[in-house]
Length: 311
Image (tube, rainbow, N blue to C red; front, side, top):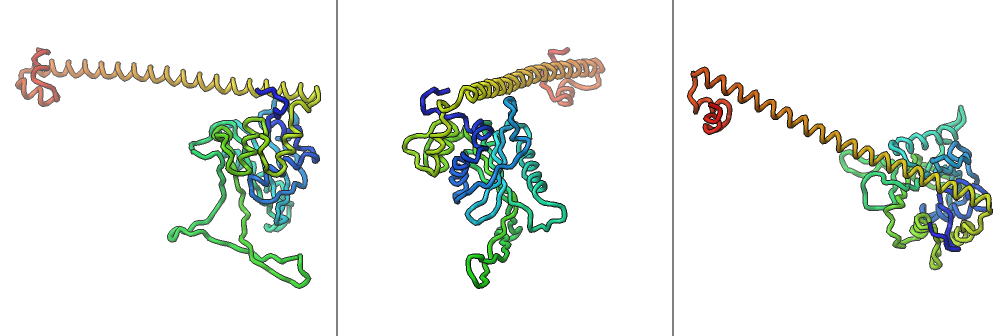
């Protein structure tokens, strides 16, 4: 890890211990604004099991209730997990947020919109990009065009009733940020944030909204002794976890190679047994004297020379 005076703490750790403080909401707002490409204002951070301050907890996830530029309330879940069934857990997580945020007897129109934002430090699937966006669409079976469903909204900013129709967008959406696939090339504001997440550094030329706040607030040198102790212990736990995963992977590969070797030996034994049984059948046929050598060779699919060698 770099130890320069401008080195920042890991972003996953910052989300768990720093960014839950309302005074630091501007950092999260800057990150979300760059990713979603719209102004984001955070109202509060929701409590969940993922927000428990456990130094050994590997599920570094922060649930956020935010209000976007259209005044919609959106639950955003930022995650950093290492799980075999990761996509299944994503689906469960967004579904649970929806259920937990609607009261018994409420109308369906009160269902909340959920965005799930995952910061991934492990490989998930195959792909060349480092940001993936998933959403639900209804596509025509025959014309392959999307179904557009709109609802009427009243403009409350004017005195006389005025309405407009907006496209309904109620299903959960997913953003997957694959940190390892990012090549440190800056093309857009979100790239500056991913660069920071990957390298624990904010370059002087970065101009994304509030990223200067991240440079100022997340410096390791600004941490108290107690915060630094907790952070160092967290890094040890992360390294230990990664080592266990790598060890398990290597053991799995070795077990696979051993199983492949055993399968090869079993195949060889079966082939040798089949060949001996074939030779025995040919010898018995020769001894029977009912077929010529040429006929025997034809029956068993071998050459005449092979038959002569067994005589």
